[in-house]
Amino acid sequence: MSRSYKIRVPIEVLLSNDRLDKLGRFSMPFDLMQILALARMQELLTEALLRAGCSDTGAGLSVPCGVGQTAVIDVENLKIRLEIAPPDDYGIWTEEEYMGRVTERVQQALEKGEQLDNHLGAQAEREVAAVMALELRDLALAARKVLNSAIKEAYREAIKEKAAQIGNVSAISESSDGNITRIRIEVSV
Image (tube, rainbow, N blue to C red; front, side):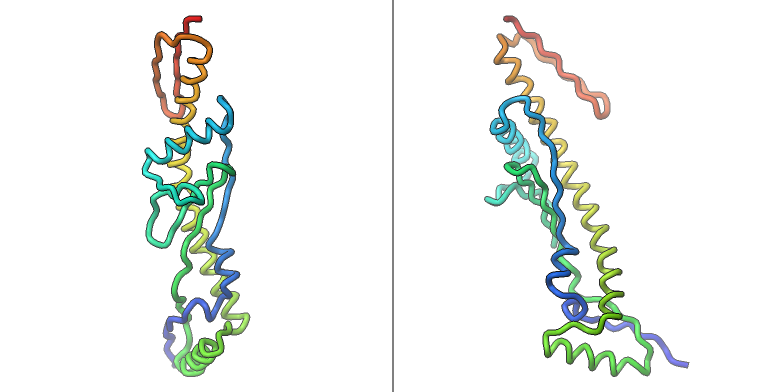
């Protein structure tokens, strides 16, 4: 009776860089109501995101994330770009009598800069894709939470500015009840 062993295999031997890039990246659009001109709404959103702890990268506003994760909010194009780092290696289970052969094939693939056969690669892709999809989902939820809060703040400021355009603002009051925010503005015209 033989034993099963788990050996660690570098991920680049199982999946191509193109495939890893596709598994680890995702972008999604978001909406921004135009209470004011689009440029001013984008400016208010940028200010709110910076106050929320985001940093300007030149290509967008980077949301604070964990190691190996990036979430960049592109205010100009109204998109969130997410990226996670692929795992460094992957565990393959093999029987004791095949361990030498599998190890040799991995070494040859590393030396040649190639991937292993389709069977091992397909299984690794399914399992790595599932793990990376969960990480991307969690990152998307965290980034969207920061974005939603900033959008809400930008809307509040835009409504106040719009009211000031109508006339003299004499009173402003805000109240929140769960997901609903009420802003009452008294304007004398």
